[in-house]
Image 1 (cartoon, rainbow, N blue to C red):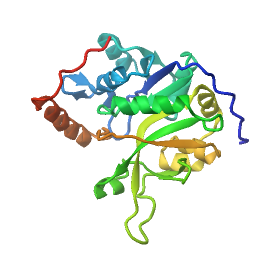
Image 2: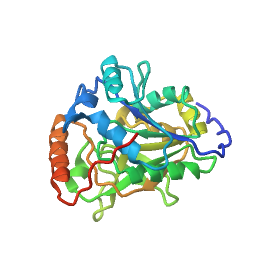
Image 3: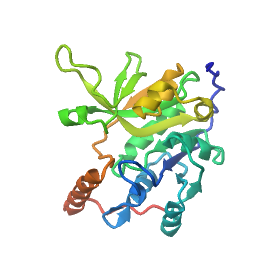
Length: 265
């Protein structure tokens, strides 16, 4: 498919977070409504978005009426979509109904995502050059187990800060010495023009093989700017991850110096 020229980026700064949530995850069906503490997983992600300073709104995007019903009960804005190949395709569908200059895809399985990281991605989107449609947050991987875990997506980054390759395998291969490994976070930012481009691209063989939607840009020769952030959160990919998340949440609540949860309206 031919590379589509990007339209000039608009100068205003309205940014909206979209949290894609689907019921039928193969590794963890019903995951968005799995209880973490006394609230479903999606509530925690939406709360992190509420705590970010740069966003003008945050909505859940789903194709499941059970998820829509819970969002209504919790007062969380929700948009219904059709079936989509990936979460970012779901975000792109919602973008047709949400006028903004930047769209932040905050994956629904990141209940501990740092609001400062969300703000950093929003800030980066506001300053992307016209040739770059998207930015993706990442953090270093210090744990060998995480480097070989296929649930943890790794990224190799060029000297100019763009993604060269994403993979569930530990890349680069440690042929000589121990390389630096970086974890791709489920935190993507798109310009309005970049969202339109993504909507028009076909899935390539790498994306279909790896199951990493940001490879769609890479395979079609678009830049994905990688943004280092500080985030020690835990993504919930499996029921076992949810157990670890419960422990992490309990430790957070049990700290005497911890601040009371912030109320967002």
